[in-house]
Each structure stands twice: as structure tokens, then as C-alpha cells.
Image 1 (cartoon, each protein chain N blue to C red):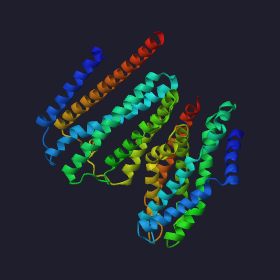
Image 2: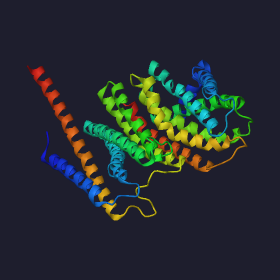
Image 3: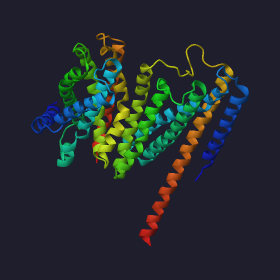
Image 4: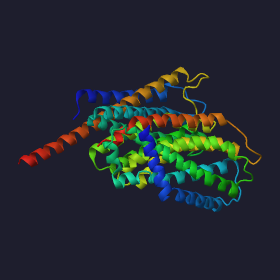
Length: 226
Length: 222
């Protein structure tokens, strides 16, 4: 069931993303690395939004543990679900970018890519964890504990991996100057569009889960009463 | 504090009497060394390779202990007793983590000299490894106890624990191996970024101690 606000959010997401990519292709200059660099406008927002999504999931998990309200658990679950999908997207686009720019599909000496792989592997275990616990209430509680632990882990992981290797990954906002204005604008619009996309997808999935829950509740009530 | 000592003492006494985990861990570690000798086709190790073999072996041996950490509680109703006892339940987390830390240190007292015997030219690198291994053991103990608690209540616990644990322990592996690599170099122990790696391990231990302290209670609720 889509409320008007969710529909507006979805439209805004599509419009912003299209606008962002238009800016990326027609307004921002082609960098020294060539046209393949344009994938940066897709890859980096995917990565940033995935990581933010994991943080958001941790916050929802904290609220779930505090209030025991299953709504927060649902939000945490959906946040992790979509962030994992966005993370896969970031890994795939990262591999494409690596192949185009450095000639290899994967580079172990690239700390950001490796950190991302580790974070993805960790959050991918969220599903086996949930399926392994039968009792619904305990499942939700354990999942929340996992989301909080994993959320605390993410910054530690990036720190450790970054320390391990000298970086060759292009820094988005480096201290020596950052992006020229046109690229920055295109990037920010793409980032905003990706955030809106993530939020709308979360809204859609939560709505769909709520509808399924309502449906099964009705079925049980009708079956019991009839 | 009494409760912590009681819980820790119980675990250590049980382990001492039954020797359920430690001999198996030590044997497993030595067998892994043999596997590495043939898998890498090397009779001597130094630098990064030595650090990697040592850290990964300790990691896998720790997983054995972690899988078995809550066996007694699960099979003989220990969790119910803890819930009923008028103590702070987080003390169970602290006691189990301390017990696991003790197992790991005991393991290393046996296994690290054997590692030196098998693969190193001299015992000179061993003393600098002590702070590295102690901090890494603390991280293994804290994260291991947390994950063991999560896994112990689930149906696929032997599979789930290593699956969740290994990504979480990557920073420990990176930092421990990073600190150990210059120490284990052929010419004699060197110290490259030694302080940095120890700081990373310390940070990891601090973060997971806090996380464990914060969330453990919720794991025991029912």
C-alpha cells in the first residue's frame, strides 16, 4: 500500500537520479582517466549509502532492544537487506571501475574495496543467523544485537584495512583539493538521488511486509472465527 | 566481583579436570603447522609468511574453543541458573571472556615455542610477540564470547559461529600479523609501526568490550 508521501519520495528519487546522471554525463568534465571514470558517480554513492544504511540499521536495532517494538526490528531488517544489495552493487561497480582503470578485476592492495568486501561478508551472515533462530522474539533480539555489533565493527574495519596498505584508491574528498565544482555538483546530486532511492525502497519493502503481516493476521482471524 | 570469580573459577576448574578443549586446540594447532609446511612447501618461515601462519593457526584453534564455550551451560541448564541468580548477567560475559582469554594464553604458551621450533631460526622474535598476542587474545576472547553466545542458542551453531566470527576478527588478524611481520623477519626483530598496530588492537578490544557489555544482557533475556 503506497501512501502519497512514499509515491512522492519514489518520484523524487527517480528525478534526482536522472538529473544526477545527466549532470554526470553532460555537465561534468571528462577526467584524465577517461570515460570509465564516470562510473564513479554510480559506485561511490552506492558504497556510501550502503554504509550509512548499515549505521541506520544499528540505530533501529538499538531502539528495538530498548522498546521491544517489532516495528524497529522490521526497519533494521529491511535496512540491512537493502544495504547488502547496495553493497553488492558497490562491489560490482568497483570491480568494473578497477578493470577499466587499472586493468584488474580485483585489487587486494586497495583498502576501500577490501574493507567493503569484509563488511559485505559480515552482513551476509545476517540471514543465516535469522534463519537459525526459531523463536521469533529471540530471533529479533539476536538480530538486533548482531546489527549493533556489526555497526560498531564497520569503522574499526575501515581503519584497520586502511592502515594495512598504502592506498591507491582515489580519495573522493582528499585534503589536497577535492573535486572540481562541476564534478562535485554532479556527485552530490547522484548521492542525494541514491539516498532517496534507498529510503523509498525501504519504505516500499516495509509497506509490503506490513501488508503481508496484516494479511496473515486476517487469515488467522477468519480461519479461527469461521 | 565474587560472582565473577566464582564463574571464572568454575570454568577453569572444569577445564582443568576434564581437559575438554585445551589439548584438542594444541593438537589442532600443531597439525595445522604441518599442513602449512606442506601446503606452502616451506621448511622455514619468516616475515609476513611466518606472521600469517601463526596468526591464522591461532585463529582457527580459537574457533574450536569458541564453539565449545557454552556447551555446559546449554546442556546442563546453566543459562537458567544465571537468569535466576541475583547477579548482573554481564558478569557471565566477563567471566566467559576471561576464561577464553586464559585458554588462549595457555594454548600459546605451548604452541608458540613449537612454532619457533618448526619454522624459525631463533627464539629472539618471541618476546616482542608477547604484547601482540596478549592484545589479540583479548580481542579474540571478547568477540568470541559474544558470537558464541549468539550462536549457542541457534540451530546451526557450529556453522554459524565461525561464519559470523571470521569477518569480525579481520581487524585483529590485520593488526596482529602487521605487528608480527617485521618482528619475524630473517635478520632479527624489527619494529615497524609496532605501536600503531598495538593501538589498533587496543582500540578493537575497547570497542568490543563496550559492545559486549552493552548488549550481552539482551542475549540472555527470555
